[in-house]
Length: 152
Image (cartoon, rainbow, N blue to C red; front, side):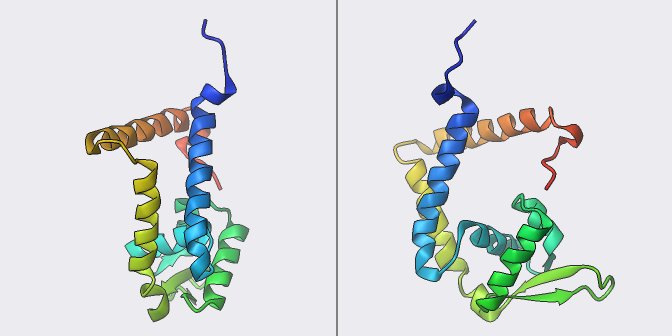
């Protein structure tokens, strides 16, 4: 049986990589007074604007109080507006403002720089394979969790 070593653990390495990438992104985001979770929130809206806060929270693995706080801070910065759903007043949606929409290209450029830096020296096919392996590993672990999802 192979000896367990923390620094060789897949979870440890994945966590270290995620933490390092987040810090790298946040260094870039400082110029715009944004955090990585705020970027993630906005990135979800760049893909499909006007989503309920609950959907955004699920996508970026944030609980309700956390996603509400992120939304409040983005609203104060003039990047989103929170609106009630016409069909269900209990549902709060986030909509990008003109100013928020204007951040898309610069924020995506920053994220791509972090991703490119993490994959430096990897041929494109290896990056594609690594992403596929990470997705498969995530699916494997989610398969061990009741309901197959990370509840937030």
